[in-house]
Length: 211
Image (cartoon, rainbow, N blue to C red; front, side):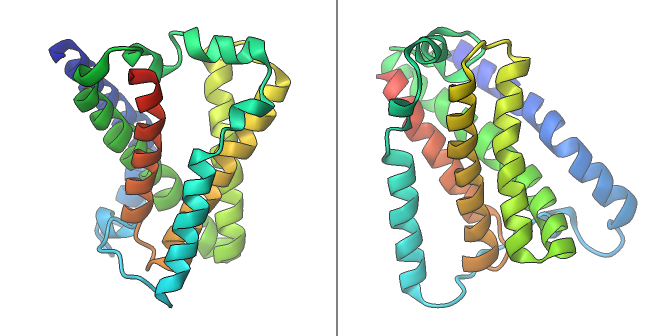
């Protein structure tokens, strides 16, 4: 278990460097005198905007999105690679049971949820929303979020099919779109709700591997 925790901490450090370097340098050069880094990327107290039923609708849509089995649209060969490749981080927890819970929580909520949200919903989305408006900005960042996952698979050398890449792009892009809408349209620009849901969704996905 200690080895897994240390590995998770290593992943957190790596993701902080990968995902936060550009936002931090951008803020340091252009905005450090006018606003704190945390406020600039949306790490602020979330405040619900509008009616309560809006968040209920969103929660239902988000749950459907994460509980729906998108693997039915993927080919068998790509699914086999997905389940066995060392480049897929969740596979390190395969059948480990309860000892993998804490390492998985660290990875999914901090390395994935928080770090990725700071880059995409905190940095990229907010810059795009300022330039093109909230609706267009959220859509563009969702597209970029989906493409990032395609690039990760390509760089990881996972030779999945073109069909798999299409499904992966749609699945992750829609996830990025929903999380962007949550921050910008439902809350007050805070990325805390999306960071929590992002981490929760990844953790739930990991549970199927852990057990």
